[in-house]
Length: 324
Ligand code: GYE
Image (cartoon, rainbow, N blue to C red):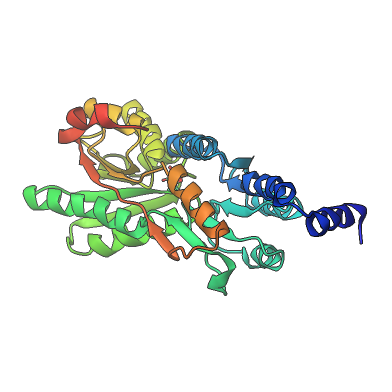
């Protein structure tokens, strides 16, 4: 038995008056909750808002947050999770850069009795008990919403062509897989909607621009729609479209997802047609979930974030209300 333990037990057992015990208990109760959080990176406006929300909410809740940026690499996230386990944090939360390959490290967390909360992006694991809850958006529904806007547009424009180029998010990530699937599902309702090229732009402006340049080089005037899995890639691509001498929002309709400030600015300039909202302000809900998990209260396995769709016509009215 260690010296500290003997001392602690000695005090607790031998103390004849409650007054000696109470401050000890109070000291334990006051110990702040420690969360280890592994973030994807800093690839987009969405991510910047998400990180700020998490840091801010932890501060307000008096939670001790250990924050690690994985720079879009799974191996960095695995390392961060292992270090959180070694530090014996109370709760591990992370936004998995890709869906698969998490079984081993999550089993290590489970063995160490540290609950895991998935934030923003989901995983594919063999055993669902490897995480307590998944707090995030319904990405399939976001993809469907983007396609629904185009299906409606096509109804009103019976002679227009809808040759779509698609800028996918990070390969293997839940939002890229799901936004593609949801879009493809609803797209079938209108046979004129056709995807002619599809490639990843890794959720960044720079890559979005670069890939759009390549699309324009090979397809040129043939392209009439851009569907980007996030606003940042759309904004990068808009620049490429203008540089190629086309009008974004008119010659090429631009549809994207997130609803960040940059997208609203592009809509106000008539360069982006619609953005489907994906709310990054997950901090307060994450802190609540972590507290509940630690207190042994039941939490739902899936917590879905509420969000809307913003076509360019409502951009001016909505802009002042935007928080990210
Ligand atoms: O849409 C994109 C970011 O996982 C929902 O990641 C998130 C996505 C978001 O880089 O902008």
